[in-house]
Image: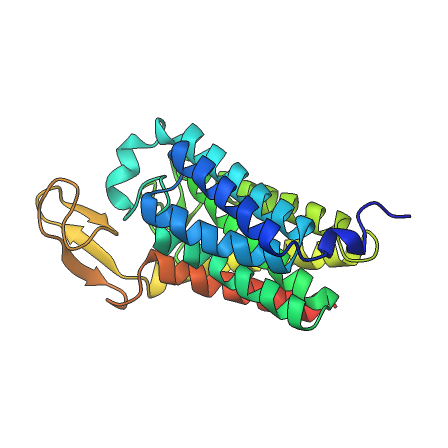
Length: 271
């Protein structure tokens, strides 16, 4: 009997809610989550574990632990670009819901109508989230990233900037989730499903970069003479000015949109 079969997808019910609470508390104590992030993580984790099962929780943990680990590793190395990002490495509720809200909804869909497509969509959503986080934390360290559309050299940390390091990191993050998704697929290991998850993660990461380069809201700090995601105030205390993009579309919205595209790719290819 396959040890990673259907039993790993059995709902955990209230035990899943309890496990999610313990994991969220541990992440909060480790300073990987803010208070609001911990509450949001409890909600997301409860839906995934209670309605999905152990396999779903393994993928969620793989994304969160690996992404938090890279964030901690890169924190001391990217101080020079910190003024560009709207948020730090301690995830708040907005970040948790942007990265995991759709995954929780897909666990609900699987509980309502079990099908491999829902599992593939769930895994692809987390693969895109992992790809984006890994690419951000590692790619920002590349000294000469290039704009994804124009190809011109941009400053490290610029939205829409890509580099070989970032693409390799994105492939690695998506690959980790894809491998686990294929191994833990309902019934038996499924290489085709793993490939669909990996492709979904890469497509989602590319969409994230494209949105960041075109329509994501970006601001300008006149005191520091630098572009930033931070608004209404820069970390220096100066009020920032809108420079480009849709004012209502910030990084969390970009993440949510790219993850939705990845989930759709997984759903269409992973059945």
